[in-house]
Amino acid sequence: MRTQRQVVDYSLRRRALLRELVAGRVGTYDLCDASPYLKNAARFHGEPTDQRCPICRSENLTHVHYIYGDELKQSAGQARTVAELSMLAMTLREFQVFVVEVCLGCDWNHLVEQYLLGRDGLTESEAEHEAAGGVAAAAAGANAQRRREAQR
Ligand SMILES: [Zn+2]
Image (cartoon, rainbow, N blue to C red; front, side):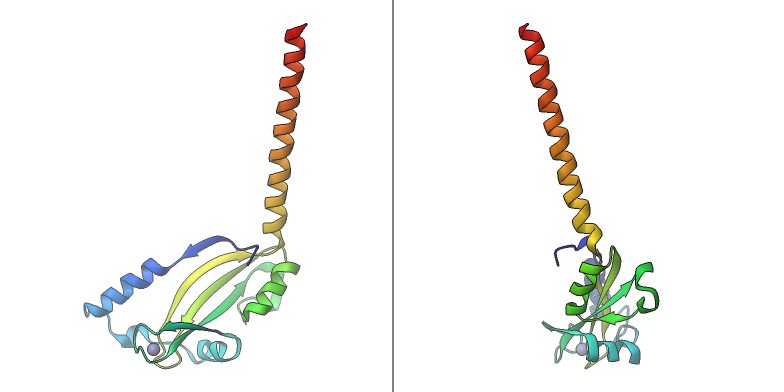
């Protein structure tokens, strides 16, 4: 998504956890504990992936996108489809998205990443671009002025 920013990737933590499992330091019982709410969210708002579940290897993972932010009011903490996220990103200034992967087969679930979405991302980068251009133009103007003075 165009306005996606401040991405935090949790894949290292995920890999570390899976290593712990292989080493027998944690059990699948501890890791495969998706709540009924999370599984419902995955069924109704989830985004299917072609990624196999790392635990049972029989189901593909589903990504659930949870949204948080003051502007969302009572919708904060709810799951949204990717299409709904794009709509919100165009109308709201800023909100936080948490992506959780879920296996509907064995209940494995883990935080994948988090990021910010919203119109602020667009206006900020555009504003920065404008400001940088303005400063450069002003500097160029000052240099030209100095050169003209030096020639006198
Ligand atoms: Zn699974």
